[in-house]
Image 1 (cartoon, one colour):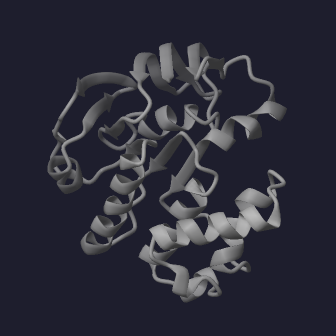
Image 2 (spheres, one colour):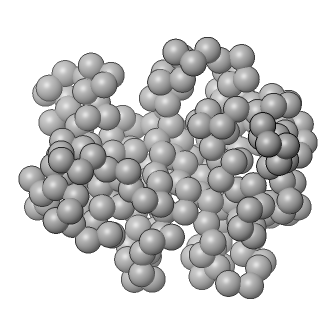
Image 3 (cartoon, helix red, strand yellow):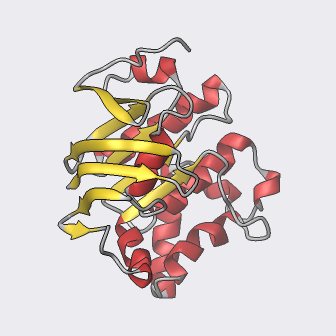
Amino acid sequence: MIEMKDVSKTYPNGVSALNEVNLSIEQGEFVYVVGPSGAGKSTLVGMMYREEKATGGSISINGVYLNKMKERKIPHLRRDIGVVYQDFKLLPRLTVYENIAFALEVIEETPKNIRRRVMEVLDLVNLKHKARHIPDELSGGEQQRVSIARAIVNHPKTVIADEPTGNLDPETSWEIMRIFEEINARGTTVIMATHSKDIVNTMKKRVIAVENGRIVRDEHRGEYGYEA
């Protein structure tokens, strides 16, 4: 479903972030991307939803080549990809309900379907009772759950999460991971860049390790492999 062939990324200042990366991820997999800070993890996952553009090689998602994609087509690509960030990126003046609904309004979904789908994902992340609250009235864990709900409300085939538990305490992090497991159990591909040794070592999933812009390890039921 996601395929990278000889993918490289060099920034205008000459810094090389990725070097000839080859990678294939099938529909329904749960994949951790690990490695030291500055190894290229965020660049790697950012390329999967065209936040970053490769300077060499090719990237395809469901047969669509991202390298040749025109800028105006990127929003269409992202209808099948949900993204969860470390810092939540919620709209501060909108309620929980409105933050999630916005993802459907921009694709001109009907009001009836918006309400049904927003309430479905609020139920999944156990936040129906906070639907009318604004982000500042929520804990960090609650804000991340809203972020996840927004990412999956359009039933994307893939969810990409960049350090989704990085700002959360351990107990809250495990609550977030249980939601990701549930999403994956429903058939959604989950790709997560993380520094959490405990989570990776406890939840045995595929582990892709990145160092100095290269994939140095790819294990089916891997471990973190670095000092926390």
